[in-house]
Length: 394
Ligand code: DWN
Image 1: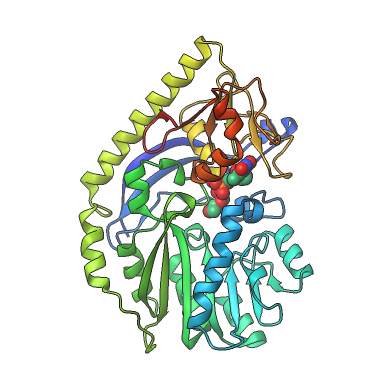
Image 2: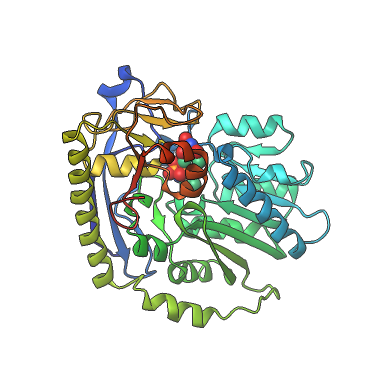
């Protein structure tokens, strides 16, 4: 397998590795570079970080903390249910704090979650949760204990797993003959068009095009039957797949979809090189804007201690000399420091503090929800800034 590198985001820490001052000295760093796999057309990291360094009992990201995501998963449940038998057996891979499975029956819903802090939470809620990484061995264990599944679902999880052949084979083994495998992850087309290079960090081993997924699913006993564009997480795709021998179909023209996607350059090295050039320009512009605010003596904070902002701050060398602090609603992140650049993280107040002039949208994917919450900040002349799709005042 040959991977052609097109982007280098430099030395990066664990994106969700929020840390205390005592932990600064031993912080882990790796080189974050991305390339195109010549065979499958997958956009993937040149070297993967070992999963247990990222997903363990101190994993900090909670999916249930935003209203947007709670609604998203209850709507997902409503749209999936009509395609399933009555009382379906459901498995979620990467169930986090249960934000999706809480919409389903405890007795017939199962979960896989390697971060044992979250696996404990959902086990306590009555959902049998396997605190392991997803692989063939685990799928065989679940098959022998629970039988095959009518729905295998995964949100923002498949793109986190380095070995996709193993992953998809394990899904195909556990799926009922007419079962559905539905998964959603950030879209490569959206990342290219929004210049949202911060979708790339240790956990996102790959950024998916449907082209690459089609190649990988086909060679592992699965086929795509539908693709839905989603607005969440900066533009995602929900892929509906079934076993290759399944009679399940949708009125969906995959061939046409692939031709149209191809035109946006998802596996064209010229387009990917051009993206890398725009990423560099975005870095220069963001640094310049933050320096201007500093010269004007403005107080700048960042809103949302996201994995995405770990990539930006480390790639652009943005530290506490340019950003005073990061606010976040997640108790596990508060009182700690941002990975790599060591900006302090504070509890999000009900409204942005009166002393703040500018807020960088670390969680730009929740722009609508945040602007609604923070209308007073905007009314008093406070400014949000973002780098998506280019560096600008919002
Ligand atoms: O795939 C992944 C995605 C789904 O979630 C993961 N690998 C990790 C994580 O990535 P992220 O950290 O970039 O995700 P979010 O959802 O953009 O994170 C939002 C952060 O902002 C959370 O820590 C909560 C915080 N937040 C806040 O402080 N105030 C969010 C909102 C909406 C707010 O109003």
